[in-house]
Length: 67
Image 1: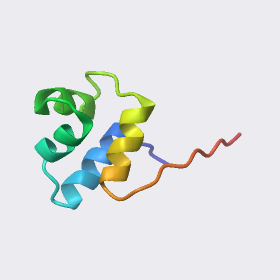
Image 2 (image 1 turned 180 degrees about the horizontal axis):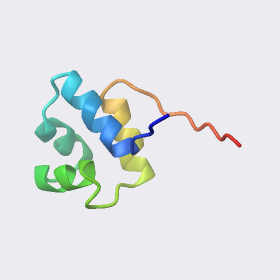
Image 3 (image 1 turned 180 degrees about the vertical axis):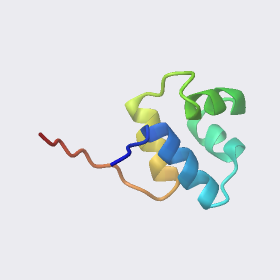
């Protein structure tokens, strides 16, 4: 099974909903350039930013630990 980084999944969800990068960046208190770099994995993204990003798109994150 192929797994994608979470930042890639969030970007795909954003695009599928037609939400602009600018609106997410504004919500997170970031510039569009910073969010773009975070979505591409060039800059780190904090757990809080991931949770806020997901919530903005109408999702809730849960942690699943597998062995």
